[in-house]
Length: 632
Image (cartoon, rainbow, N blue to C red):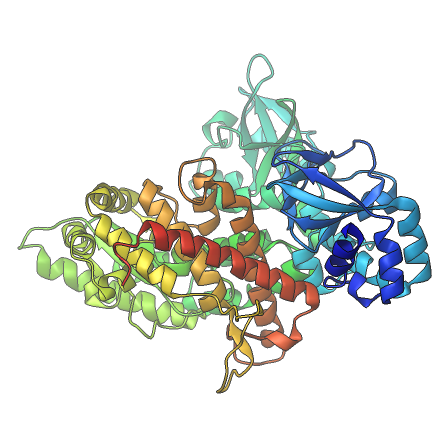
């Protein structure tokens, strides 16, 4: 009876379902069965090598990888019923990952000797298992989508795999605090360095002088070059440990608006990394686009640079970047373009009459833009008196119109729904904005909930950020008193169900222009965004990005605390699939959309899509049960 049970099970899952019935029965005689309680470490990274190919009959396992440089484990995959694990260690002789049972799990175990006989006699089995395991092992989402060969390593991948300590320059220019600016500059020239480290009396680093400091603080301001270097150095020294990946350093440099960073080993300064180092490593760094943007002084000069920055997406895709990394880099570059247009607006119209803050909304507010679509922004300014009103409102009206037109020129289309600061409704003093949010929360309606999906994800981008945080604190205090508002959000979430058919297959559009296609943004990404937003607002979390919200919910008491890894994994996969689809459209000169044809997906992509949708449905069912009093 046990043999019959194993045969029935194997006959339903690839690649065993392709075996002849006699061979399948013979294979079943070689199987043993193992039960792993939830929390069991089945295989440990760098531990003993597994001696079986394990086939999951029931349950779920998590596969994670501990980085060489230390830090938290990186989750590679989750596997469930019908999937296998253990192939990499069987073939490679080294256990490269940790495999943990996240539910009570039952597996069939195929011994190594019988497995070797099987792959030697059936090439189809070998091909399937290699594709499934090795592709997944190396981050199956990007590898499968991009069709890359796992065993090829090139400089294209160094940005995401190299540690900054591998490329940093050793410091050769070190000066003491009483050294003059002239002496420091001369030593930088003699030693061909673009920065000098300034040390205190005990040799501790207290600052750094860069080429940029010499231009902006000395030449531009007419500083005496015979003064001490401490007068113009940048401090404190921005530093990063040598084990940090190059990509993370680039992101930090973008966010801090610096082009040099000290590299440390066990707290001691080891060297410096510069934008030039990344240009040499990569050929074209995101920092280079950032620098091009910063150097522009007119809209006419900024527009072509802004549009050209889109090409970095193709570079990141070719490098095998994760979706979260791609959208973070693109968001940083987009932010710089918007800030530059804001600077040009102030230069054109003069200083603002009162403090203000420019808000990014929607996907821009969540830092989740891929290829630029339309604008979503708003403007909040300090409260004013009646006598100030005409002058202040006219200034910000002209300011917002300049911004709308300038961003269109730079490739950001105007919002069809008019969610822009150029709409007078969304260019208001702080007291009006507080009244808006109070009404949306205390008197929720379908229209209010629709606006919440745009405005509750706002992020301060430029100006007086205290205005934005005051507004966020205002509605954060209100939400606990009005659970009906969260109920309306839950209602919208559970009604956008992923299209899983009766037999568990993903269903596409039945007719129209996109027949047999699927809108990844609406049916896949949006429910994940809505899930993270609902529980973040419920818990009073300030973050706006979906991944940041999920991280903040990890280990808490919300319904999704224990599902964070799975949700992040699903978000990464769906976002990367969407970005790659749009990149192909851009390259082909086609209009960019969010529809993918289901028949173009590989079997692994199809299975991953199904798994993501099942996860969304599972959480929607839990939300439905929790907020059933508000569900219409």
